[in-house]
View 1 (tube, rainbow, N blue to C red):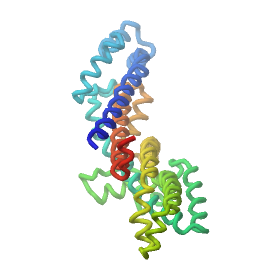
View 2 (tube, helix red, strand yellow):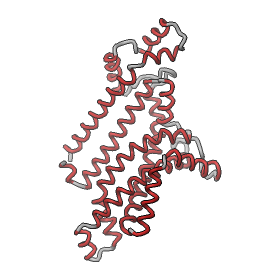
View 3 (cartoon, rainbow, N blue to C red):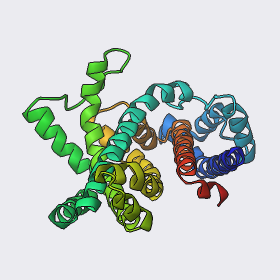
View 4 (cartoon, rainbow, N blue to C red):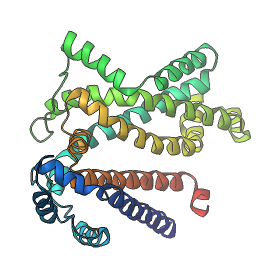
Length: 313
């Protein structure tokens, strides 16, 4: 198991380092244009050159990357070119917001997918057909449309929950819960539809196996057979899809945060990209990559725990 963990962790480190290199050179290759945007399009060339020297982007890209990497490994991701705020400090404030809605959406979708997928596989008939139709429709509709509908109905019309804004959990748990509920539901709908289909397919395959019929012939309750035995063997493929859905949900949070005015990574990424604030964009890219790698590592470990054959593959 330790070798399996180290192998997966090493693969994750390689992915993050590779992404760092690619993102840095793609973003900083046009950094000279940002220096002109900061000082103004009509600024004299010597003023632009002075600003570029101040930002450190007048040096060769390899030298810039070496300095950035040496600082990044210590947690220093530089400063915003426009506000001067440390990028690390900015991200530490915004990451919890995005993780609140993303992890909440993943947990909610996993719970609903297990219930609906097992129900669909066990009951079949009209229940199965109805759930499949709902799942296909839910997966086809973009998450921001669900976000707009939820904000309009439950936030503006019924006023059950806030339509916009965010209250940190450290200030008020109930306030935090009220501000993240609608974004979580908006993000979870599509993820639930995708994972439900995988759970259903895996459960149908498992329920056809001989050992399931043996358990049923011994008089075990159907619920125990389905949720106590079949579900564990069907969970592996579903976990793989759930890991992919984390990436989808994380990307969808960029737009959903704009709808609900949440001060998360999505809002920071959109603002920094529109201004050309490359250090902030770079910080968002790296943090996103690290989070995705860690989540997929956790998924791999769960799959290895559920199915020892995975650890040998």
